[in-house]
Length: 158
Image (tube, rainbow, N blue to C red; front, side, top):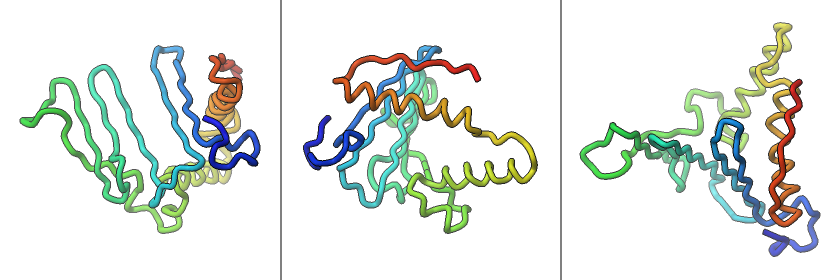
């Protein structure tokens, strides 16, 4: 979108952005983010769709741990998806892990990184993978700033 809510902010502060990605293996990935939509409690919403089913956490209060799933060939007596527990926060994680805003994923990522350094091994997400994860988002923002053009994501092959 544009700078409707905060017109004086920098170009990095678009109201909303959606990134659409088409992977080499043919998958489609969509990431939607908003800089201005109020969400309290903060919400992280996951929706995974495939040709044989889907799973998603609830779009409401993520503290309720509700989600839905449908798998081809596993229909229940009811029509459509079945409700499942879909917690984005590990209930067994330390309290400090629950304050990050993205469930507890960043806590475990940092713990894995520190453990790898302590043990003298390569971290599961090192600088190379971090760049691979970051570049598509940067290019999606650049594409939005250019009016929604399609940009190729380079392969660095590190």
